[in-house]
Image (cartoon, rainbow, N blue to C red):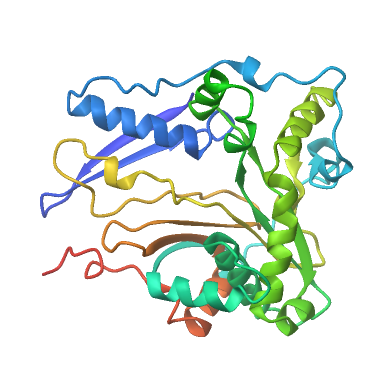
Length: 327
């Protein structure tokens, strides 16, 4: 696995640890296991009982392989995509992806969840994703254009129904066990719908991908199409798309456990500076205040500006004061 680590000492005496991963080899769950183990080794702690599992047989396809047609609608083969177009140089950076980090207070998350739960209680991730989807649509002037939303689903919890030993192995599986179901709606539809109905749509397209059968089918789909490489369709922003964004829950990011010997970190975040035009958003737990979220956003500048102007009470720019770095 490609991995590069850096350690930067600040003038104030603080330290910043950076570590890169190749997502073709390991997902965030795997990266979390590595980081926790690294911190434990740095403190001389006994090895964790959660030993990473590299058994690829845990993802063995069925005989005969079979899958639901929805998987064909979720992925596209790379060989079928048109060659990338090099954009003309421009001084206007509104069409370029940039990264910013915000914090969202716990009570704000609860308020949004209450608004989104008119037709049944919706999870905080579904609520957040629906709110973001609807908010980004507000940037669109052409109501016929589409906004795509994808949400990363970890398959480990869904593939744990095959005995205690297999369950433990799957939980400790080091690699990629992800699916990214997505949906699309027009700018006009998202603008007109209340948050609760948008949340219903998010819940609906997620529901099928949170089942064991979905991941078993995905394993079979990969086997049937070897060696062709594929990519999730939500990554492929079309000419008729206003925006495309992927939300990945980082609520299990173990930032409070990453003590390398000098105390709990004041801050931790993932960073995804990928190419293309699809945005990436990851909400993570805050170490400063229980229930708050740290939200990493990699979006077009015009969408980030919209987030700050239209929802300043929700997305507050991260600052040293919030992190308790300034007395």
